[in-house]
Image 1 (cartoon, rainbow, N blue to C red):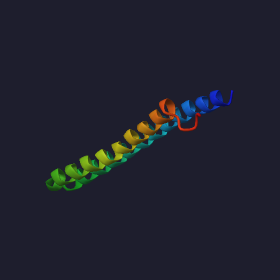
Image 2: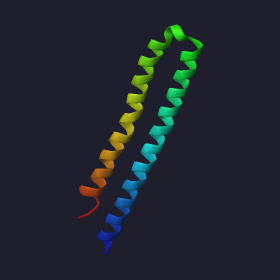
Image 3: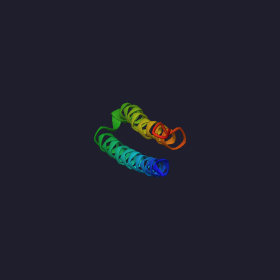
Image 4: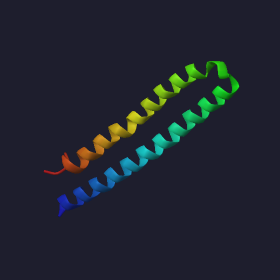
Length: 83
């Protein structure tokens, strides 16, 4: 009975991890992209420099959901809390 509760809580936690990570990454990507568009509109001659920095930032932001997905998979399939 206790293991069933732990497994159920782990599945719920994995879902919340996925939801939070994807929501955070989407809002972060949107913020970075909107600031890039503002910078590119103000200084079109430096847009290529800003674009490189934007892609690096978006790549770093997208690494967080990938890491959290790995943590969620570990919670579901290789649960350290189940004996």
